[in-house]
Length: 294
Image (cartoon, rainbow, N blue to C red; front, side, top):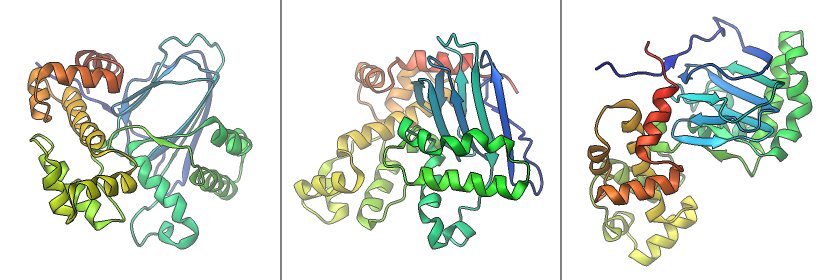
């Protein structure tokens, strides 16, 4: 049986082009789930009820939605769902910027922008407050005729968004295949251990030993540096791998449950539904409906 795959979009951004900007007015979303090699900023207005899927993130949007995606393998789609608006506005910008350690964005003035774009490998969504701050620039972007000024206006949008304190990542790191990074060498060693051993039982004492700390001190240290409890982090990591297998393989839910490190199927189903809002089978079915054979 042939498995369905994500369509790989060939972007209009070509050769030495800096930006591809498309503004549309439409009544429905029909494009299937896809990914592409270039980065994307996507703004949607007046489309409440649309379902936005980015990796293993599944959210219903309101009147305004703004997302940046820089993960080149990260699939995404905006589905019509319950939206009944007949005047949807969408602005899509395809772009590419060098995020390497010695690229132009590694210079000091661009530190926050580069940090944001690296985080956007998992997809980043912005609050209404953030959107309103850049709205005048977004609103007129497609009308800027001279390329240089369009680029500088777009970079200003990215810079302003990079100041956000309310942006939130969408896909999990393990689903998006993003390598873990951290300013703390201890946290990095622990995250790498979890990433390699997520399918097995992971003991607090083992992780504390890796960090060279007592279990209680390590638990406080981990939450301070990651903003999450250790158990929540491990569950998120396992769910990311499980979601990826649900999408990319035809393995049974039971197989995926155990290969993701959950000790029994009912526990896996319960946690998955609590965190994702649907059962593993429903998650798989939703993806199959938005994919095409390529």
